[in-house]
Structures are given as C-alpha cells and as structure tokens.
Length: 253
Image (tube, rainbow, N blue to C red; front, side):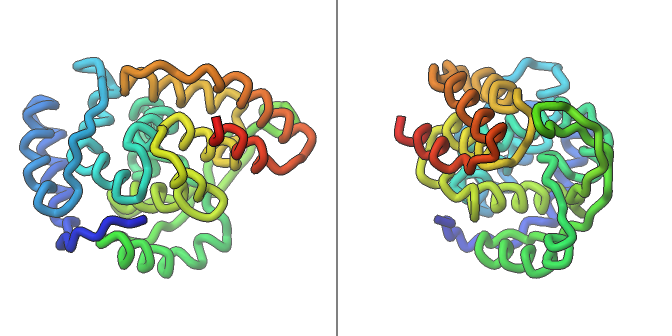
C-alpha cells in the first residue's frame, strides 16, 4: 500500500544534493544538510545503514541516504533491500556505466517495457506522489546463468534521466506483479527471497551475496533458511518448475 503524504515535487532538490555529496562536505555533514530538504516532502525515514567510513560503499550510499529509505518504505520495501541491491549491482558504485545512467539496480528492459515507459512513469508518479520521468534503454554486455552455465550475452537495461526515477521504478517493480509477495512481509531477507526467487537475477549466488550485504548494513544475522531456500530455487529452475511454491514455503517460515 502506498502512503499518501501530499508531498510536493522534489525533483529540484536532487541536483542540490548532488552538489553537496560531490563537494567538500563530509558524508555525514552532507546527509544531514540534504535530509532536512526531504523531510518536509515525505521521504524522511529513521532507517540508516551501517557502513565503513571512507569506503566506496559509503560514497554510494551518500547519494541515496537522504531520500532512499523513505522512498523504499513508501513502496512497502525494506530500505536494506534497496541499498543492498544497489551496492551489488553497481559494485559499490564502481560501475561507471550503471552510475552514469542512474541504473543502480540493473533493471532489464524489454521491447514491451520501453514502449510503455511513459505510461508506467505517469502511473508511478500518480500513485507515489513523486516526480518520476520515463526510462529509455541501452544494450549492454552482461553475464547470466543458463542451464547451470554462466554465459556472456547482450541484454537491454533501463536507463534513467535521474536517480530518483530509477529508484522509484525499481521499487515499484519489485513490489508488484510476480514480486508482489514482498508486501506480505517486512523482513528484508524474505523480501529479497521473493525478488530473487521470482526471477530478478539468474546468478546462483545472488541470494547469498545480497543477503550478506543486508547482514552487513543492518547488523543482523542472516537467517538459517537461506541455504535450503537457495537449493530449492535452483532445483526448481533446473527442472523448469515455477518457483512460486518454494517462495511461499520460505514466506511461511
């Protein structure tokens, strides 16, 4: 469920925050200064990640922190999932291609999705109250797992005119349609299980890698069910079975 805040558009604040984070101010000074800009616009949140000072991950999170947690919560997503997937998909911000194109979450783009991008952006803007702009697409080389083998192939990826649009498009995607079971739980590990289990990524190590990031940035212990869940999902994929029953099993734990 979306939380209605009556927030006015905030797109004009994003470049201002970019100047703060890329300038001489420290991470914490920048986030404190920018946070006040977004609090009165409905994207404030008390959630904060644990991060090593001076690290690439800290610099990546600095671009998300003032509004990212509040945006995730507005869509019913735990902020740790949004932050952890951004860290993995961008290599802690080291992928210049992903960062330059505001594609922090590596969302794929089909021909159909590109053709409906404007309508999708309008719907998200209307439902969330955020100034979302449509994505376009580029084809990049990527690695996928096919029949148990890692292969290199070209795939379409969504690219965005600004980071806020990219974050909102991703958050909307992973809380709807085949991923809508993320709304049944507030547990970030189980939300990630829905996202990976229902096909967001083909990598066999995706669940392990991103859950490790969630563990690190939240200071919580990974659940003991993750290895068995991973094995079950991989078995479903190897047998070309639908993974819904395995995802439901995980959610019931």
